[in-house]
Length: 557
Image (tube, rainbow, N blue to C red; front, top):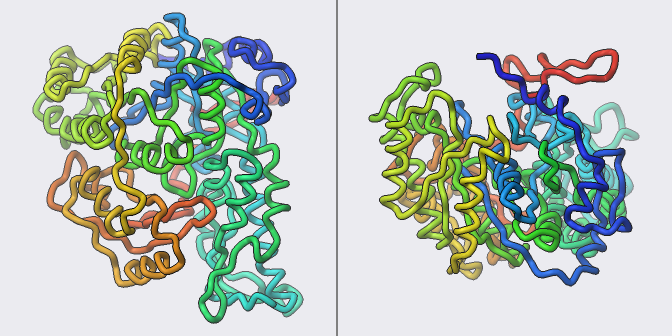
């Protein structure tokens, strides 16, 4: 059977003018800043002026991702449309796609099938220029650091100890490690440097976690850019760069309003900050949606061991709110993959492999319900190859943990296919929650790391390399030991080894590097071979993307 591509479905959709979408959630025209007919920024003054109570917050997460696909964004969008179908005042809040994955592996990140956000092409490309602003602020700081050194270096910054890197919104392995300042004295101080992808910039983290412009400026001022010859830290404030950087971000901090195919309002803002694969939107966007609607559906990236853990332990602390319910997305295909079935054979019924792969899902469920103490529902993103016996096995195993399973058919049917899930979510949101964080902020760094490893990953313990142990002592001596932990780990496994799929046992997590993100307000723990600048695959998605004479884009998916 031939199916329409995502972009074909999106291009056939007739969008409502964005002012009409805004009117659904009663946004006064004075807060709407139009970017063409179908996009708008919402002025953050709305948050200052509103007296509305918060609505219910629903977090969508998933099992550890596989090549078979899970469909978090598709489920998020379809659930929002499903809630609208049953008469609820609802919004979705999503992250902005990065150009790196769009042209690299994914080819787009705006949902799929009949559960998409539109205008899909704009969202996946330059959108409203937020990432350009973030990259500009990041690189302004880099230029000011090197200029300070060139102009006499009164702060005595050691060029060999500069931790701030330049950035670009593209996967480009060639830029991971470079030498800059070549060609004579007037070209600056020759030193080793490198680029990160824009979403990995601490500026992105600051923007995503800030509650307003003043808070953003304060966070930026605290960013540590490197160290002096006598090993004291140097901040943005000492370079007097925070004002200019914030000026570049004054519009980027405003959330972007778009719509689903069924015209449900969606705020898309921010990205997977600091390369932690958070896949979550900004605090400001979530706060705004909670004031504008009765139900807010939001998403955290990759598996719940990464995205949901960081959403709950990092973002919720800045947000001042916690989810009323959690949706854990899985596909039967992906679970069979976790059970050892190759991608080529996933269409065949295999109950033994499915049962083995279910261990991955059940651990995520247990984490949400017993570690974080939140009500959850498993959403099975339906595929035509799923058999009744497979679906019944998933349902039986989840019920043993006291968690409901709902078949989600939003990819094929849009909001109509999300009604069953919507009804279950409403039911869960009416339950009382006793939310708990994974760790206490007053725990020391090693205790927090061990809490995540033992409670969430179910590993034995954390192992710090000598370098990481030294960095931990330095961070604690600087007074940053009470910050939350941001684990940078492979998304494919609970462990730090991507090949250990399912629910591995008896493993340690090795932290090779601890980095303080003082502006963002967390400590990044790097494990395995996690990088802040990915590369393009052998056949990048860019090779399939094209545009015709009329400006119609093809190949995004």
